[in-house]
Image (cartoon, rainbow, N blue to C red; front, side):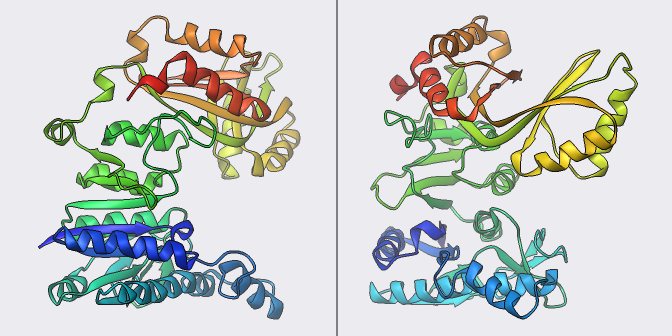
Length: 408
């Protein structure tokens, strides 16, 4: 039995027209000889009676605080509703289908409500339905503890559901349907001439995702890379197969290019909504340790860290900037903050071994009149911090400079 897991996000199932397109993708897989397993996200949007925000607001009318266990129970409802509605859409196109909660699908987690970790998957119930000719439609984003408590998997949870099911079922592919045609050289909403990257290794894709591309959640990407499950990032609106993420041997066998063997840069990713802090040590270098200890003690994650003898610079999510300001002020640090910022990252291979890449970055942004606030680099990335208002222009300038519109 050849199995394909197909994940449809909320933007792919929130209207009848889109659900019909999704159902036809499932039927197409069925006609190709696959036994499809479908994973769905919640389709409700703010204002809808079944939307998560609406349900939370209803509960908070009675009492403002919802404990973590009960909140997970509530949050799981959106995906369960989607799974039943998707079954109906599949029946309309002639397929037999059955809806399953995450627990019914065999996804066993720990008790970390709100951000549970999958311990194991018991896929026997799904396998039985597939053998009987049914499409199994699984509510994403959720699982169940050993003692039957419903849990949710945190951000990107439906992607994680799809990948762990793919691993447990030994699926041929996990298809992630998004609102773009695949993994691109840049966000096509910013760079209209962006190209589809038809094949990527797990390492290449993981780096693009880590730097901010929202085609698949990084937790799910990590699982796929560890267990070597092939991923296809696809679009409901496109007849192609999108981007295949797999190992090098499979790329070569499929006749696809290994981009990291050819070019220093093949994609540009970004992360907006950041705040930069520059902190001085006032001639007391021993304060470095106290600074990072204070941030760690308060659970603050930092990025783009540049450390100098007399000062340091780092960025945080803009949503915690007031918290960081309070910490630094209480500890007596002198600091400057710049906000809002964005991190623009070039993703490629062997940048440290190829002279001239950084000079091209500086030249492209200088010619575009964009100030670079901070940089960091590795063997496969160069990241530049810029003012958020300059982010889109920076991405377009770099895309042109490295001729990524000619990549494919």
